[in-house]
Amino acid sequence: MQSLSRAQARRIAVAAQGFLDPRHATPDLRTLNRTVARTGVLQIDSVNVLQRAHYMPLFSRMGPYDMALLDRASGRAPRRLVEYWAHVAAFMPVDLWPHMQHRMRHYRDRGHPWMAGVDFELASSLLGELDGRGRRTARDLDDGLPRDKQHWGWNWSEAKKALEYLFLAGEVAVAGRNAQFERVYDLPERVIPRAVLELPVPSDEEAHRELVRRAAVSHGVATARDLRDYYRMPVAQAGPAIATLVDDGELVPVEVEGWRQPAYLHRDARIPRRVAARALLSPFDPLVWERARTEALFDFHYRIEIYVPEEKRVHGYYVLPFLLGDRIVGRVDLKADRKVGVLRVHAAYAEPGAPPETATELAAELRSMAGWLGLADVVVARRGDLAASLRGALQVG
Image 1 (cartoon, rainbow, N blue to C red):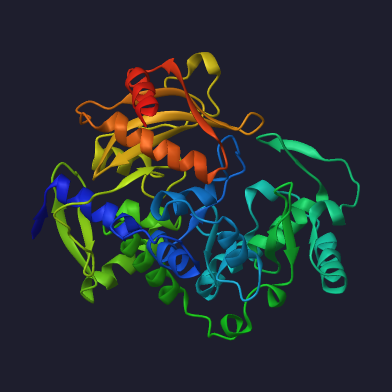
Image 2 (image 1 turned 180 degrees about the vertical axis):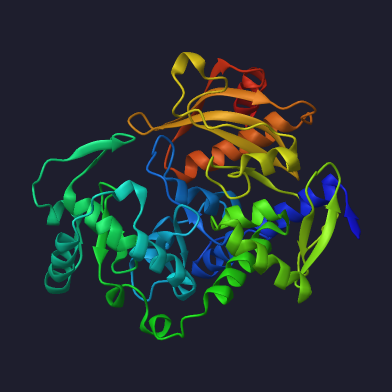
């Protein structure tokens, strides 16, 4: 069996995620398509202390780009991306729609714990409303009944619960998001390209293999758990799919230094000798979203502390790892202070063994991010062992 060092596995993973691709001077839709082909999905999250999560992985790989590119690809015909529960809520390529039919059927038959007590008569009525009136938000269609606050403070009306059921069941699709970040729902035939809707629906087994295949391409090298997590698949679906892809030679069993579990290398994965990456990574970036994998690859312990009381936070509220080469060498707690036009670095920390150029390289990436966000300056607070050298590097620049 082939053996890989941890450094090789790390470089394979970073390359598979698109950090080996040269940045275009002016990123366009072709650049975006190439990047999403690497990441597979773009996780969506509502936190906007810096920038919405789905925009961030594109910046990390493409550099400063026009965010309207993603809005266009996901919100205008012919759509290249569509929102669905792929990893969690995420943008995925529209050609995955047929491969999600088994998941949609599961939700249609069994619902979801978050939507206990869905009014199916109301759901049918809402479908009729969308058919006749076109795209609408839940607020547009709200029946005015009392809301509940059972799920992390979410304030869902009965209409919202019914629409979310229809969304998971594939009976409605998301046509976009409005300025308040609310989903705008419509019928699938008015969102998904006709050519995609007319594709044959694969068998469940074929769909499972395709999801594992795409996860393997995006990971490069991965354990079975990693492969299952990428599209949130149960063991009963992913296990047979992995076995079939191994039998077909598409996945190659390997041993990775320090990993307790067997791993699988995608046959087309690149194994570069060097990766010259430099990127700030969103907490929801697919390179680091699975924390156990992040620790196994980078020896980097990472937890998001948004839901931790301030006095108990270790590194900060919205902390981004800093990737340099094929290592995570630091982390910064960031906030876009749009009122005064400043990117605030509330804290900056170096990882053990971070190279001497860490502060200089991080300063350059922070300037790039500030420009992309339309912020005029970067201001570094005193917290963290990297803060002083980072302030110095920014002053020199």
